[in-house]
Length: 250
Image (cartoon, rainbow, N blue to C red; front, side, top):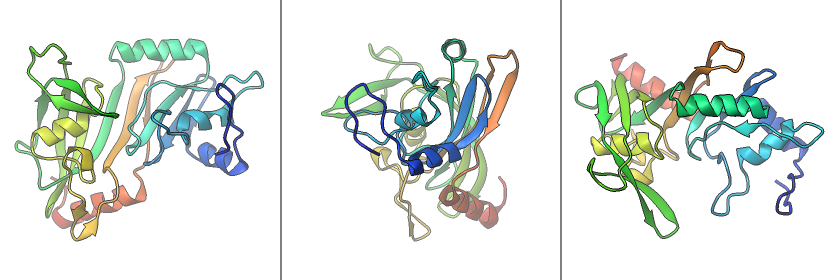
């Protein structure tokens, strides 16, 4: 991506414009939804310059206004991400998210096996822990002064040798919530070096976080409820398929 001065729009290349447009899974007069790939940051921070937020200038109007991110995904998480094309749409969707009217469904590959029980609720408060320039989330006691309520529902979809495929439905939206919750029950997400995930599965390296935002259901500004699905990336799908073929659906 070309360099730009502070506060100005980036000078996107034709390839960058084509790339971000290829990510679109739905567009109408109010929203654009995209399938974010793993490795693409949602927004800048700590020196990140190649971000989805900057690439959204590919959809800018003649007055320079571009779609606004309604929520974020971690850099290494793939899947559905929603943007608002207008200020009213952004306000509507922001209010709906604050009111917990968004329903998010993720898939994750964890190791070393399926959780016990294979379906349940992880209800464990989290607190932010700053270590130098890095931020972590930690499980903490409910009465900790920095405690934030965090709840994640999960169910096992498939189990293979040394790993399992889970469906996750967060009821709250804390930073790194799914990653920390699964690590807290001894089932960290594969590829999650920060929270103890394995970096090898079946003798093959796991090169990134195996977490995918598979579906998003939300109230649309037009008054209807909308559900969107993002197909899993090839590397995630290959691992998931191998688990299903090895042991079948749980």
